[in-house]
Length: 116
Image (cartoon, rainbow, N blue to C red; front, side, top):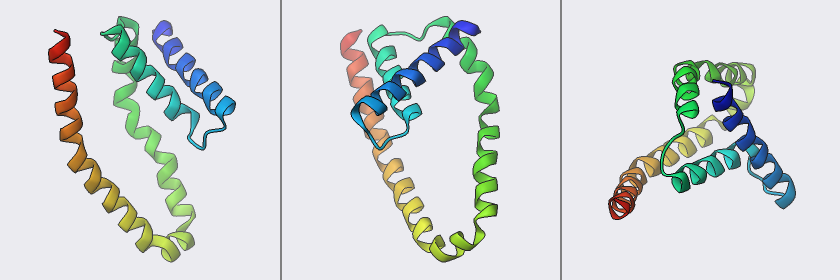
C-alpha cells in the first residue's frame, strides 16, 4: 500500500517540478497524472502496488467532490451572476468529451493491437 501511495506522491511531485520549472498555468497534479500515464504506457502494465492503492482510493472518490459542492453553496451570488455562462461551458465541454472519447478509445485499441 505504501509503495502505491509513493508512486502517486512522486508523480505529483514530478508534476509540481515541471509546472514550476516551465511556468505552466496547469495544476501540478494534472501534469503529475499525465506523467504517470506516460510512465504506465512505457512500462506496459500497472504495477501491483498501484493497483492495490487504486482499489482502496477509487471507492472514496466521491468524497473529493464535497469541497466543490461547498464552494458552490458559498459562492451563490457569483453563480447567479455567471451561472448561464458556466452552464453553457459545462454542457459544451461535456458534449465535446462524449464525442471525442470513442475516437481516443479506438486509437489506443489500434496502438495496443500493434504492440501485441
